[in-house]
Image 1: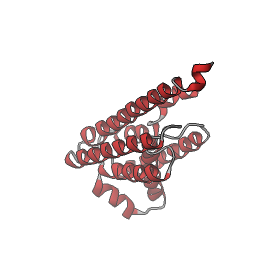
Image 2: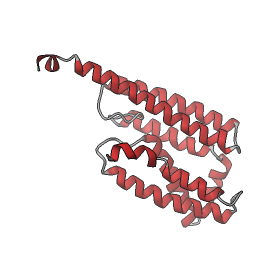
Image 3: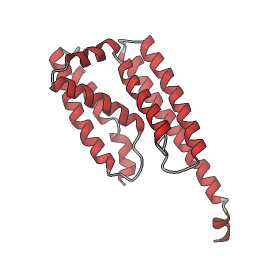
Length: 188
């Protein structure tokens, strides 16, 4: 049951950040700081809950939560230089986190950037490369449309989430097909 509800809450921290920051129009500096601290807290809670789930965590969710947690910690500890870097990068900053998490998990995790539970290592690596490529394209789009949140953040993040889901779906179908044709399943 939890697995069916999880997709509805996976982007809760970033949604909360956006909603809180922009609820009253253009956000003030104080509202940005509050939005970072609030969404960082929710992001930490979400990561704690997801750590107990037996499936690998979505790398996009992990990267976005890391972005929010770093921003929340910077706001809390008044590390303005971090928030200044975020401000300079604008929406591109999120995609730098996504790409960094993608690189690390592609090469260090058996589940890859794609976060597949189990499967062929080559297929997981190839799908991770595809998602990394999509992340680079999303970062380029974020840079081109900098300042327009819809085109530089919302649509690219949704696109990455859809690409990840499509790749996972295809890998799982491929895994099911090879398992269904294995000698063990033909005998039973």
